[in-house]
Length: 260
Image (cartoon, rainbow, N blue to C red):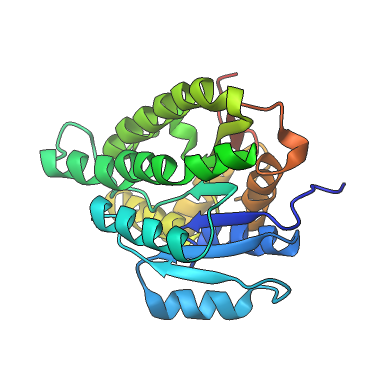
């Protein structure tokens, strides 16, 4: 299937590892010109060198704990280079733990890095999308949007806020040829999952292998996702072929989520 993504510009957040990096690779393979964005310049340079070199890919160094600096850097990039047809919002999740014992600053930090930064990037990038009559915003969230996950209290709370923001934005931007959708990863083979398994193991007294097997057994597919499988879904939603898909939450979780 021709996704008709050639000559599109994409800003991919959190793109030096895991799902973000896999998404940058997948989109680049479809002819998209990628701008990576993350806080570690060395990792950005390393990822940039791995992208297919048919296009002039680039990167922006920015820390999502500082929304105003993020906005300034992206605006500066757009004024000196180009706007973006595609925005992939993807940021590492908050640390785990029960919601009751979470400190207020944990909520504030997560809200800033996820919802505030998503909103700032959308406001910064959407004017170009409107001019082009084409825009795709894909937010990488979590299956906790449909079914809260034990031990991830702050994450469950903030992910829900992002999903509602996204649905509202989809309704507002639909008339301009811009879609806004959410991809909800289940257990995916990333550094984030390794951290969750390590914490589960420490709290339960089980080995990491036992914790891993227990998590896999909760998935009908009986395995974890590969980042590339999430990237494929994100890339499709960013394409011309997905023009009539708007405002959805798409679980990519091997069937683990029990709700419809």
